[in-house]
Image 1 (cartoon, rainbow, N blue to C red):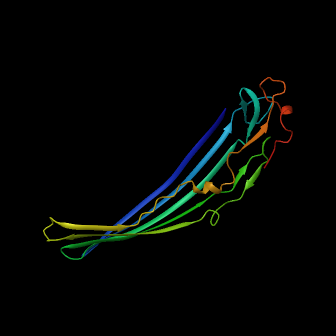
Image 2: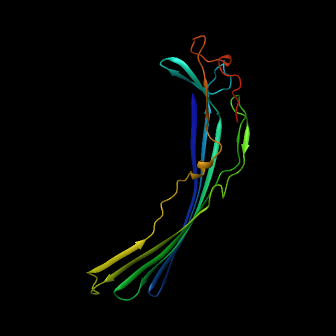
Image 3: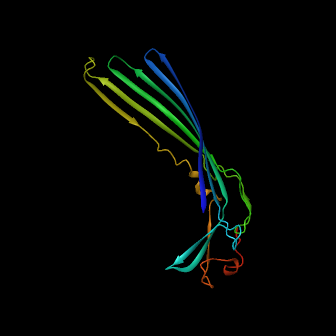
Length: 212
């Protein structure tokens, strides 16, 4: 039987400050987010003919076809971090016209720490070096905001409103995994079950099963 665990850990902070100055109502803010995604996979298979080897059997119309070998246990982590700053101004130009002006800045960086695959009967142990910018690119975006309200007759009953804004769709939080060299992997080896007992053994599989 195989088991897996997906853990998401996050740190968030949000600060806002408002300031009133005559015809201006100014608001500034800062947002911070840090995310860690961890994926673990392991097996509790305890099969004496293939000691320490996580596997499953593939059949074709009930006949032995192949054995799938897994590189368990695995333990992978990726990190991402975001800084967001915004400023907006609600400006009462005169009794009829109010304008809303603003700008938002977002910076995202992510990285994969050094990760190590343990040695097993299936895969050779190795370590993968840390991956960060430019391999995992840092991202930066600006998003302007503009809006207005015009009171046609100055009595608060009839107004013309308009706005033009830019919004960026948030990036997938696990985008560093696209280049993550360490993940679950499967090797498929042919198996014909020569003694027809439905149980794979070492001498029924190719001799060199270990790969990197």
